[in-house]
Length: 109
Image 1: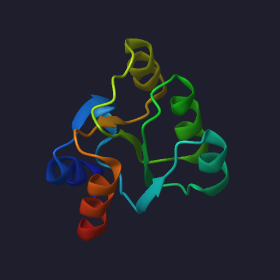
Image 2: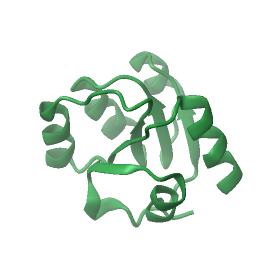
Image 3: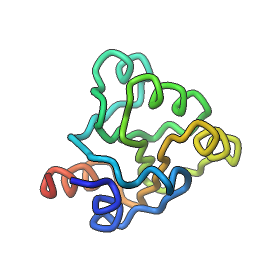
């Protein structure tokens, strides 16, 4: 499924990476530990997390994530949004808890 469609269906807010929403989403990966994401996430997956610090951008870029979905309306620092824009990483925000957001993605895919 195309990321732009996922964003619309899940009601996600695009914080960064508007130009990269036409890529394919292959699944999802849920983790808050960066080392787990580096070891287990696959290219094309959406990464669901509550983490909002700058390092999430580097990790998403490293693993080739389709984007980062920050859940529970966690506040995102402007520096993180700016870094995501600069590196071409899609940064999305969900108002819902992680579980509910991921269940909705699973139903779409």
